[in-house]
Image (cartoon, rainbow, N blue to C red):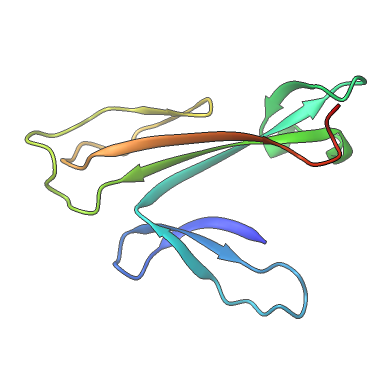
Length: 121
């Protein structure tokens, strides 16, 4: 399956899932509304099968060496006037600085790291 950020049913950003296997169809499913940004890093393991570094997909030279995945999501509040004044904060999303612009929305960063089964020692 593939995951991406698109425009949701409410007109705001949302996290979607789409099948990538032939025969499953191509209908995307909205999973979570309010997800503004998603960044993914891949954990590259060394000879001992322990992750040595997390890198973007463009820096992976051998996908067989990927033993983990680190995912960061930037989520925003559904209302556009939650805070009392404009918030111009930037957010670190697994190493990438995200500047959503100044508005009165509340935002939250969620990050998780997981190992790929049978790839770690």
